Length: 157
Image (cartoon, rainbow, N blue to C red; front, side):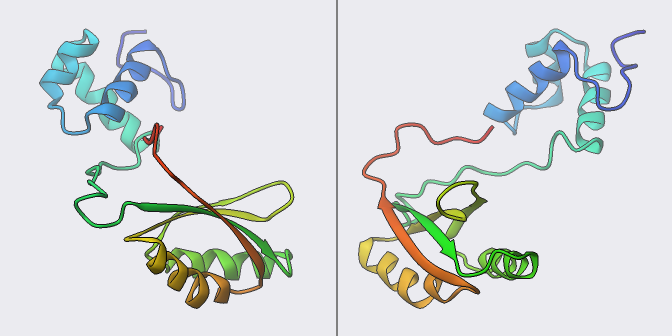
């Protein structure tokens, strides 16, 4: 089997290198990517297309400067629901998707149901979002907030 003939959902060292490089620089050209991982351009391009079509690469995006955008305040919010049956979970999930300040929303196994990463301009704006929006999401029983003092490491996969 040559370097472009991997079966679906099978990753090798070249694929893993491609993913690592793209995670740090999604704007790298295919030529630069090929040189970086040690393949010629055509096989690298074939692998890249396969990784995209098989869903390993979901898209490309810019990493924005939260300070310059005036959204540097980060709060992590534990959310406990009154009802955790499937319709209640779906209603909460759908509503959380529509709140712009919620940057991440994770269902959690533990003493609470969801953990939200909320980004706002400052604490008073967060307080407004919590009181007017998050607390009013479907089936919310109570919340608990943890304010981030500093982001030590903040990156995707």
